[in-house]
Image 1 (spheres, rainbow, N blue to C red):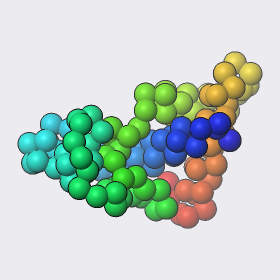
Image 2 (cartoon, rainbow, N blue to C red):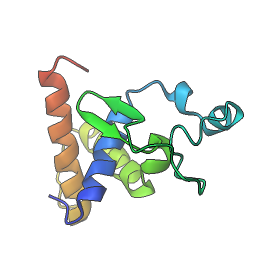
Image 3 (tube, rainbow, N blue to C red):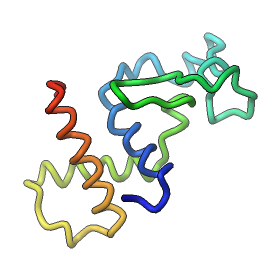
Amino acid sequence: MFSQRGREKKLTVAFHFQFANQAAWRCDECRKQGLERKRNCGFIQIEPLSRAPVWLRGTVATTECPRSYISADSLSWLEAFHVWRLGGKGELRQYSAKTVEAISVLESELLKERENGVR
């Protein structure tokens, strides 16, 4: 898999977060309600209240707000995955090795979703 486990986890969180209630995780609303510390917002420098999971879906969890936890690379790979699938799962040679690895991880996550009767 990825040489850095954190990169794979961020990608997995990004995959599952796309199916979550996005409205509940809008930064402006969260800050208005004073939830940034409770949800361990990574966009601001504060000491978290705990290291307990603040977001989970199935077996995927994170101790930081998923909006701040997910990297731009993960979002890019998620988009490449959707393009690859919509394009009929064509040649992977046109993608970088890291993107192909990401597609592999995401395809595995999608299969797990289908096995569990979700999506």
